[in-house]
Image (cartoon, rainbow, N blue to C red; front, side, top):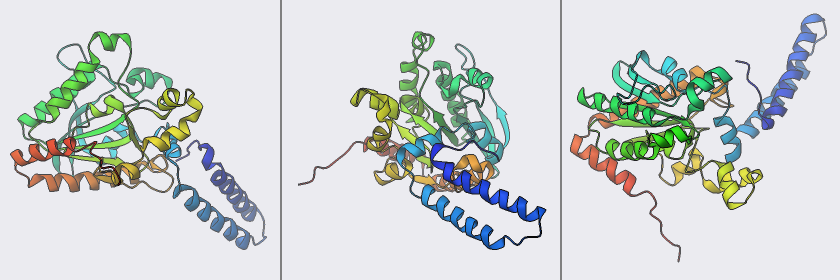
Length: 320
């Protein structure tokens, strides 16, 4: 897959270009260039390892936003089978930023719901850049209640910069729609697994993020505010987004350390945008593992554990 390189990936791209030129030259001539190619291959491997194993929080945010990163429906295609999309919130209409429907995961029927972005202007307008309206969250809850009725587990795939903040969303009560989901998801009587696959922005993410297990792709981020928004508030200038990303502790590594998420799902070298199928296979096996673990928990205990999981967030102790 040909991907547009990020700024910090350009040394890798330069080495890959040099290697390709050497291979072409060797193929067109009888000169032995194997030692030179081996030297560049070794340097390329080392450069990739040094860059991708030491990514900053801001660099992970850039990867999470990459236009060629797999989106919700890409994961549905590669991780799930027989997806049947369901539409509408039965109040206002359908929201294409929040697809959802029945599917099979490793032979098990599930309800899969998530945010969907677009890769070009036309698709982004259709999907509203992954920012759902109130009807998106109301549709999500309708599908969750349907899953509960038929005793089917729920998988949510989170990838949004935030819920849509426009006037029409306010008119239709976006804050109430998200708050209602937070309350109702706490009481859904089937297992829920949420996965942050890209951007996990604010209440827009949390509106489908109340779950028994919260997982994150390795290069996703999950935060109450974007780094740019945080920088504009605290530093009075969006140019400090790099510092804000570090301060927010929004990466999967940081959130795993403080207990906000339950597991980090590894991505192929360089990020999910380099290998959609490999990333989808990792997501499939990890989600399936957690669903199997949740199967054996009685429903009253499941709800109690879900409640306690979220109640303990924000606890802290001061060092003496």
